[in-house]
Structures are given as structure tokens and as C-alpha cells.
Length: 208
Image (cartoon, rainbow, N blue to C red; front, side, top):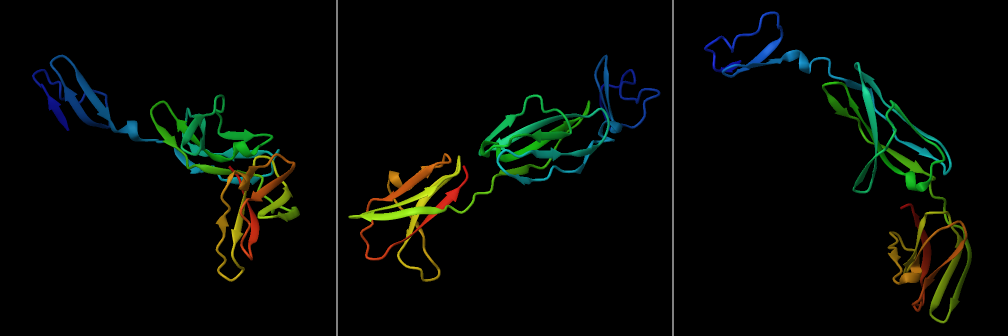
């Protein structure tokens, strides 16, 4: 394909130039588009894989790419925010002493002098939440309380149900005392209106 002024042969393929798919010509210049610009694209042969590590553990993400003169840049995704990881420019990303705040998605952008490709996003889970162990429960008037040991960074919510008939319908207890963020110490959740004749409770634990 060629277009433009060809008074001096500007639309002709320059001698010695191969794999030309298009020529754009002007009065005193020509621009040739070579098909081999799209050849030898880097190809990801192994995507980074998600992993689950304990708090304080080590997470490793790796990508394998065919190509030459490759460069890498890793990114971290949490919620709707994407962050460039400064200095993380290798095919392997290692996260040491992983904390719950490191949980999220990780991907890498791979480039050669011409092309750029993006890997799949791998998820990191840090410290699967353990079942809360209730230490003590109580009722004073219409105020119900549950005390239990917490894990750092885990959000605990008090829930209640009218009965244990299947399927059980659990509801979040309203009020500021019904949700707490753990810090590794003993915490208490409160239902300020535990006035029903029968009320069953559980503590829901979630990571941020």
C-alpha cells in the first residue's frame, strides 16, 4: 500500500528495504512501514501465579518471557489503586516479611525497544484468618458482649440470628461496638440491644 506524492518516485519502496507493507510519501520525504516491526513480539510463556503465605513469610512472583532486550516493571494493585513498585525491574518479584497490607494483586509490564506487553494479575493472600476463639460472653440487662483474641489487621464483626434453623440468616449487629479491628490483643464486641428472647451470635473475621 502506498499513498502521497509520487512525482519523484516517493511511493516506491526504497532499494534494499524488505518487508515493507506501506509507504506514505510527501513532497520531499517518504515514510516506510516495515512488517518486521511486528515480528518477534515478546511472548509471556509463564504467567505469575497467585500465592498464599503466612504473616512474615516470603512471597515470590515470576514471569517467563520469550524475546530479547527485555525490561520489566512490577505493579501492585489494591482496591482501585495501582502502584508502581520502584526498583522492582526483574523477571522475579520477591516480597519478604509479608504483612496483611501487602495482600492484593501483582502484575508486570514487559518491554523491548519496540513492544510492551502486560502479564496477568496474580493475587497475594497473607495469613489466612483463623476462627476467632471466644474467651467470654455475657449479658447485662439488654447489653450482650463477647470477648475474644484478635489477629493484627483483621476486622471482626458481631452477627446475630434468630434461630439455628437452616438456612441460617445472619445479620450484622448495628452500632459502633459491633465492629473492631484486631491488634493481637483481647477485644470485645457489643450488642447494645440484646433484648430478644432468643438470639444466637457469631463473630465474622475478614481481612481488609
